[in-house]
Image (cartoon, rainbow, N blue to C red):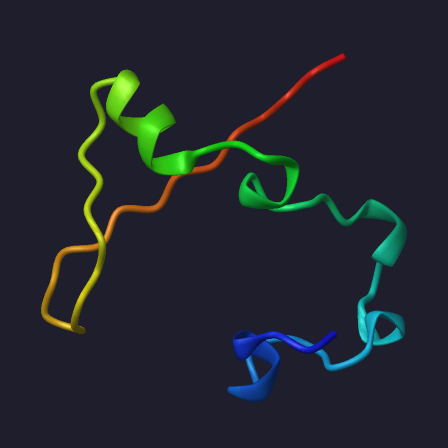
Length: 65
């Protein structure tokens, strides 16, 4: 996996290094969800983080079949 996170040592470079690769789920952006528009439509605060001093908001989404 070649991502900026892998280059910074935040995740394995190879999917085989994950403990449960079969349980991995794609990121919202990877499946075409506009996270910024979705958060704003839900009334949640979200802005681009331009420095370490900027407040950060973390959001996730659970989809159930």
